[in-house]
Image (cartoon, rainbow, N blue to C red):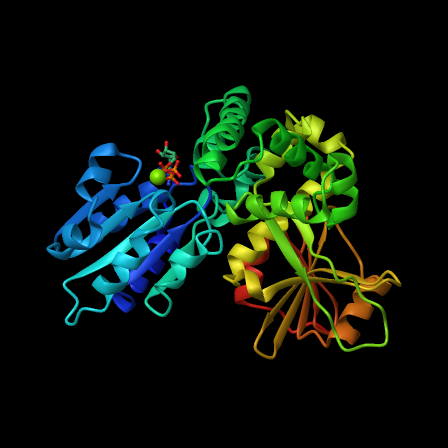
Length: 389
Ligand SMILES: Nc1ncnc2c1ncn2[C@@H]1O[C@H](COP(=O)(O)OP(=O)(O)OP(=O)(O)O)[C@@H](O)[C@H]1O
Ligand SMILES: [Mg+2]
């Protein structure tokens, strides 16, 4: 077992502070396993229901009445199958004193479950569970984590071929079972073609028109395909940052695969040697590094942006928290230097700090507020930033 203590502690804390906690993440990322660990640490009675189990569906046919008598911690798994449960939870969450707290698990975002999740506004705290992080598997396993991605069974598979088979099956199940279960009616074959084409556009500014042309549908329809991948935690849409400047800036989001292993699967990249000579190697590493960085900083999706001007200045990741602005550039090289684009980002965006994250081993200063740092050393660097200069 790979320990996921940081997530475990966050969940326990959130459960002390909120009547309902939502643990969300892609299929197979380890939600049920982690919820089991929460239950093991819980002092008092716990009870679990799974909405993919017919018997539990029967037991909770009248959810408010069935759940009312329970005490302690109640875990409700696969809530995306019963979105109406949210309305029942609202009543249960408003009881005082609180006889029970609820940990609900699902693989679809609150946006996708919109009307239903709105009924819990102010009573629920969401936590997203991503794939394994560098901190969890240990920085020395970074190449394996990059190649195979962070789904537990892909990362831990007994060999490369087994890992690929597992990812191939995950993609298939996702297309054939998961999406139809969410009332998403696009045929699996069309979605597979879209997802594969998205691999070519991984890390690029999203261009609806181009996708719409190849699929012979409207811009809005292809954007719907992208949104469902994003709402099920398979894709990440990075928002464009717009600064009040005279320069023209890019206004569309960038699209990334969240998991590098799934990216490799849909790009036909099978092994590490092939990855390193592949034309999309740099894009793959950048996507991997961005996910790891976002996890390390604990930033919310709404705080994460990229920035690009039509004159060519850009910043891969900008994290904005209140008045604080931290920039990240990702370079799949070993000893990057300061570029004119980085200088423009520092000045135009007024960054507090710029991290140039690379695939080498050395950490060094690139000037005032700018440091180059290996991805494997980023956690340490963020805890103790150098003075620069
Ligand atoms: N921390 C871990 N270390 C090792 N293996 C893990 C870990 N977490 C999960 N796994 C394994 O990964 C697989 C998926 O885990 P789990 O069923 O908890 O995921 P899930 O997110 O609930 O999936 P689903 O969305 O399909 O219900 C299981 O085989 C589980 O044993
Ligand atoms: Mg599960």
